[in-house]
Image 1 (tube, helix red, strand yellow):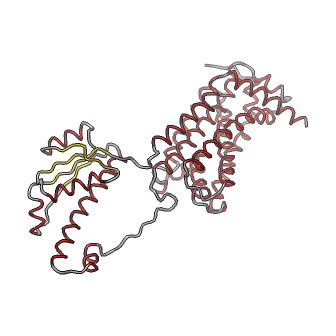
Image 2 (cartoon, rainbow, N blue to C red):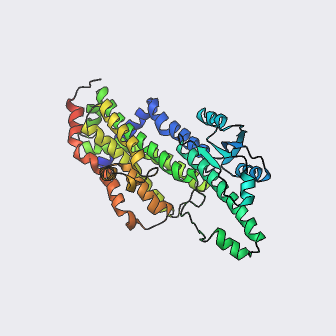
Image 3 (cartoon, rainbow, N blue to C red):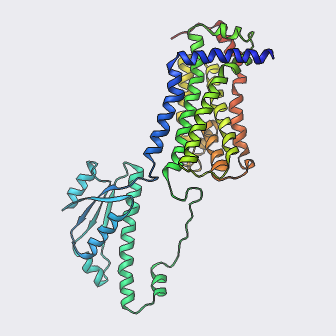
Length: 389
């Protein structure tokens, strides 16, 4: 009972600190709300749509106009400009007006009818990776559909049956299934890693910041005195409020994306709750560990920000870890976000049993326990260190 009363007393003290310092309110409540609304509204359509495309149609036949209409009808592309020459189209792409352009040379239709295999060209910019990839996909599809349409007409004129035409034009039928993200939505794959990743960054930053402020204003001795100089009780009381506030915010975020936006989650409620508890505990634990490693407000926050920002690239959501160099693959295990993302994929998104991600659960627990190795150093810093800006 003595320890519980001390923890509650320190928690009330910390709650008063959070109420007086506006930085906590902004980073714990305002910024997460803005963050969630920003990502979910920016990606609400799932994929980029109506990307501006240019066309250089020097053939101007019914066939070429049909290709242009089909390109304009695609979901992610929209024919915004028609150019007279390739030079004009290239200049427009260099100026950022279009992401790609289609070049249909003169005589394309005549060569098609004569069976002489005409060439159409498309050019796209990879300055923006996602836009360039989607534009090239649509342009390649248009070229394929155009050749298949002519091939179908030619075979039909020669008396081939529908079965023979299908076998000639598409000898192999592809039956593709996108598991867990059937719509190919960027919102499902990006929001669920960027938002938790940034929240974990702020949890680590605020945990290091909180200890640094105790050192800066020389209130660490009073903080420890409330726990009878028991650093474990002091840490538990201090971060109890942080954990509860962030749990509240994250559960609201998850209710919004899973119940209102209907993000896929085959794992059920308990897998989400378990992962959220580990997410908050590991983030706060890493922040305390960073401060204990280097008991300085500036340096501990720098370590936390650097580690979690690198985690965005190393977690494997945008670029697969298996495709990285072996040293980077080994380094990826040192980032909490990597383990969060793996547990989310396995247990929440796909609904597989917890045993399939047991190592990543253990890793998150290990990050939670990291402060154990620096508790003495944190206590010593509060009692003896002098704050240096």
